[in-house]
Image 1 (tube, rainbow over the protein chains, first blue to last red):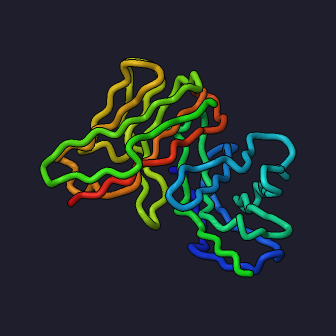
Image 2 (cartoon, rainbow over the protein chains, first blue to last red; image 1 turned 30 degrees about the horizontal axis):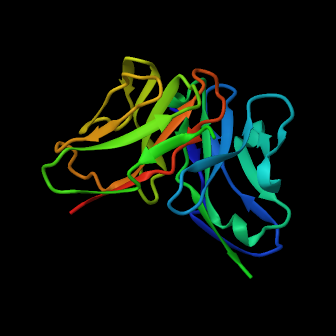
Length: 113
Length: 113
C-alpha cells in the first residue's frame, strides 16, 4: 500500500533562513508527488507537483522540491523563509485520480523574527 | 472568479442530528471529493464522485452520505451514525482522472455540542 511520511511534525526557523521539509513515500510505481500548503482555518493550496521529467521542480512562492527515486524522497526547500510562509505543509503521493492520492500528516512551520 | 465554495464556515450539531455541509464549484470539474481533517492525521477521504449521479466511498465513509445531482454541487451529510463528527471538513475538485491540481474549499468546522 502507498504511504507518505513527514517525519517532522513541527519546525521552527528564523526569517531569512533556509528551509527544508522532509517527505518520504512508498509507492509501487513511479509516483505522482505533490506539496500543498494550508494556512490556519483555510483550505489547501498546491505549491508544486512532480509527474515526470526534471527531478527538480519549481513551484509558487519561491519553493522547490527534488524527487530522489533512490531515497524515495520529495523534500521541499526554500532558500530564504518569509514570515508569511508560516503554515502547515502537506506532502502527497498517488496515481491517477485524487481518490488514489495519500496525504501525509503535515509539518507545521513556525517562522520567528 | 472560479473556485470552490463551502458553507457554512462553522457548524454546530446536537447529538442525534443530521447536518449537511454544502460544496459548490464553478470550475467545470468532473471530480469532487470530501476529506476529513483531524489534528495530526492529515486528510482522510470520505467520499468522491467522478461524474454526476455517481459517487464512491472513500476510506472513512461510515456515518456519512453524499449526493451528486449536479456537476457543480456535492453536499455531504453527517448523520447521527457518525460517532465522532467534530472535525474540519474539506471539499475539493479536480479535472478528473488526470493527476492535476486539486482545488480546495475553505473548509467547514463542525462541532458537536
